[in-house]
Length: 127
Image 1 (spheres, rainbow, N blue to C red):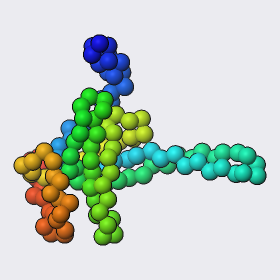
Image 2 (cartoon, rainbow, N blue to C red; image 1 turned 90 degrees about the vertical axis):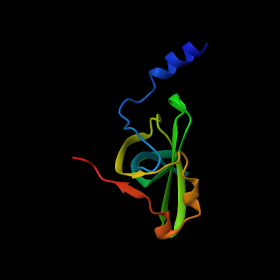
Image 3 (cartoon, helix red, strand yellow; image 1 turned 90 degrees about the horizontal axis):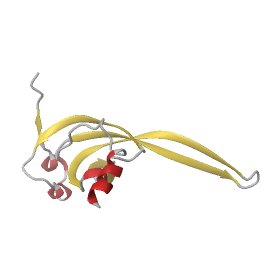
């Protein structure tokens, strides 16, 4: 039974994703559908746009096609966390902005830290 599920999931998996680790700062391009209804004309206007979300990976959940990444950022002093499914058709692309050296798989301790205390040690590229 599991072999059949893996075969079906295999055609929906994305191959263009970079290797993502906790502590990475990612820029995720997410496709958003905006639907406007006109009650008088009874028409729907559907528009798509791309929204960019940049944040630090504080956790990775699931495996296979159900893999999700949890990103955190501070927007105008308010903490924002968002969960992105990696194999979703709404995901346009993922860019790795920077990588940080961390010693844990889940960085939930960053929720309690503010400002300079929440800073991670950045790994510089060798090249």
